[in-house]
Amino acid sequence: MKKFIIILMAIIFTNTVQVHAENLKIAATGAVLMDADTGRVLWERKSDEPMAVASTTKIMTAILAIESQRLDETAVVSGKAASSAEVKLGLKSGEEYKLGDLLYPLMLQSSNDAAVVIAEHLGGSVEGFAKMMNAKAEELGAKNTKFVTPNGLDKDDNHSTAYDMALITAYALNNENFVKLINTREYTFSCLNKTRTFNAYNKNRLLNEYEGAIGVKTGFTGRAGQCFVGAAQRDGIRLISVVLASGWGSAGKQQKWIDTKRLLNYGFENYHKEQIITNGTEVGTVKILHSKEGEVMVQTCEDGFAMVSDDEKNCLNTSARLLQCVEAPVKKGQVLGEITVSTSTGEVLFISELTAKNDVLRHDLRTSAEKTINLWLNSKFKCIL
Image 1: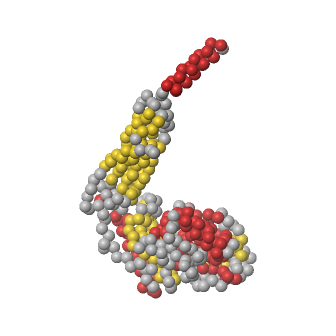
Image 2: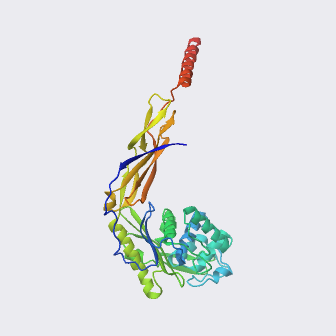
Image 3: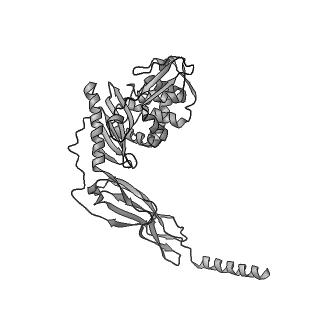
């Protein structure tokens, strides 16, 4: 069994590390604010509680369609799709559309019939597509999510959580085509025989009302209430907010925008991106058996960044865990430990490998004998030539 030594590099405790958010008034039953790049949760309320998520479900539908690379294919509207509940585009059974065109009514104005056409085309059926959705959710680490429909209508036990929806959205925002889609203000398209033309308009108010807004998706059903997944970017920082069950009716519709702006404001005003680890920083040494050097210097192998508050920046705990000893030879870049950076409350912000700074050759009786023999053979061969 490999043994480790622990090096505490910097430990500073304070009673003021936490950024107090008691005055942040959010009406949503479930909510989360997440840094899109690091995945750190900056604020949450019941973020792991399974809830109905309404049309925010369509975020998963859209990213699966984009990743399928089948957007130029022809999709046929089924009777099931045509009979979808409101809100819908009014697609007719038998009509044909380019699959990629249907993403715009799906995400811009939440057309439920477009969602079913996409699902049936890519998954063979709504049930088949739901399996694809759930497989992707599991891949992304969304552990408390179960998709039953591609549109989020109240059916069976279609649910997710505020945290899982933020996780899925963070993944989707890394796709340039997805970001372009959700920021489109208006899109015009026709069925393939050109008999009908549609205009899809973006109903995301955040794009017009919040500086740096980049998305993402509204949602409402009788069971889910008013929901919204929002995202904004300022000064290289991307934040994702999720509010679930912000209320019902017109008051709830207004409240979800208020909740979203308050969460995003809180994040931008209290947190910033900080480099907490520098690539190539020497951390300590590891003993090397059967070598002339006897040890090797261990160093960090990447730059590390985290979203932190000003208070947290001044009281981060950094610890390195190194192997006590290894046998030579050791290669430059060989993993010999790991480094962890956390807040004084124990929240882990960053974990990275620690690696050997240089090569260390093996030196013992056997290797010495092999070197001697090789030198003799090489000299003898030169004499023959």
